Image (cartoon, one colour):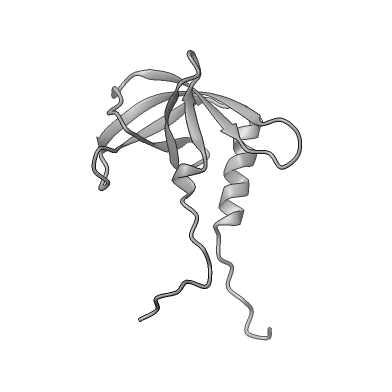
Length: 119
């Protein structure tokens, strides 16, 4: 059994923090994203059926952080496998084009493409 990793793991859920769009306070972390919605991992349960103004603050190598504002409705919320954490699924009501770019970039970064047999 391997004891040493060759590649360090990065917890995506702790990289992309989500904030309340009204008061700017942290609300959780992105668990996953799609074109039409997202899953949020939070320390508190979120109200199902409620509409949320959310803000993503994306890290930037050069220049200021990029902020993406979203309007989303919470469709479900359940306990996560991690104690004292909750998963909540959101349907996007409104998102700017930058959100689509983020989804596309994450999809490409985390995708595996099969190599051709001739390679």
